[in-house]
Image (cartoon, rainbow, N blue to C red; front, side, top):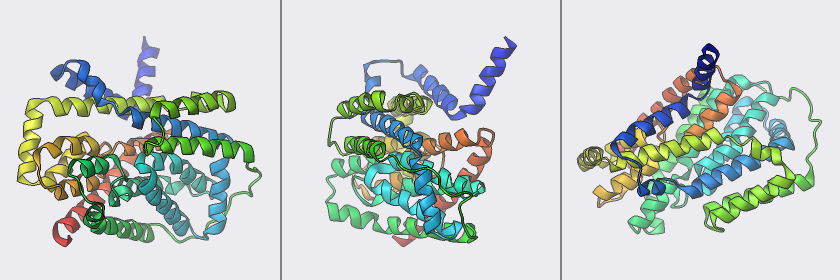
Length: 373
């Protein structure tokens, strides 16, 4: 009995966010009993994309892809400051193309190996946090940059150039803030390899994994149905790298599912819906940001869009509101899980630094949007 209690305690400590998500979902189920509408909560396309990219990234790690690429970056950029800034820019740009979740899954391992191979793991928490901020803010410029943009773009029939011009200033502010933060807080000390690279890329396996990554990304752009892409990735990896499937972070996927239930139920509780409806009528921008902190940005866009006729402030809110708490954008959970995997005893310290940096960014961006747009 005692051993079971100890094991349970260790599991909770190691998987705190998962346990909180399950508990939050369970509480809302008392208010909204399970029914047929529950199935609508789950974004199966997103879950399939995340599963596929997680599996492919595992496969790339098995052939030392990220380790080899990270060493090339170290040799290219001569200081810690420039190497970390380049990594964050890569994540920022990628989020504009493949969305924040997939950008983080793809480039967080690259960040880890870059720091490990240059003996700079002390910068890991800062780098991961800045990659997360870059991913969450990078996709705001275009309608397809993230799910909430795509939804509002369609609902309000926003013209393309109008969408881009609306989001240009917050996008520009974000780039400037990210750059200044890295330039100020990261030291410009020389960066060098701890040891020379002994691994060589397996050309055939690398090409295969890249093809599977392309399939995963095509799911995002509706290039292929998500279930066909999912089956294709699983089928190939069953023969090429079965271990990549076994090592997928299934608890992360279950955490997403729990938050889908929580957010979906919150939107169906009349008192909650009426409360947020009242708030958005008072100040769409600020109440939208506040809502993102509680139920994340995509459900906030779905919920609050029913109470507004003018899209501009809501569009600002659900993009900028993606930074802040760990659940303001579920992509942040990906970073937290990846960090704790490498530093299981430093989860709370990471959360503290994450909150400090995120809320500093959030506060500055709120002021800039309110008074300079």
